Image (cartoon, rainbow, N blue to C red; front, side, top):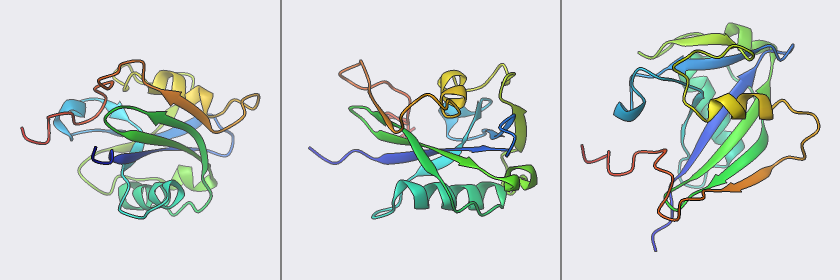
Length: 153
């Protein structure tokens, strides 16, 4: 069985934890028009911490060195590492690519946010939770929350 691709979802919060850096996605096609966190695919041999740092630097121009893994989503198709960064640099995040980067209020996420962010954004801030949490998809065939078959489109 080939290894599953690994992704990182980088939740970058302001120091007061009232705002999170998000992106209006234009790609991949299945996310176009939706709002998601920063992140992407891990490179071969790259740790989740290094991937979060790299993706945030590439997508919004700030270099946040400290990340904490809060959740690992294990799926038949992929592994997702959800990382939390808390930094004053969140206020300096800016659009670098063709996908708009902005600060969102953690208590009032946009209507078109990717569904899992509605629970991941507050969970990552919960001081009563022992991290990291490991979650396994209930769907044996995979959750379909990635590019399943879409890379060929």
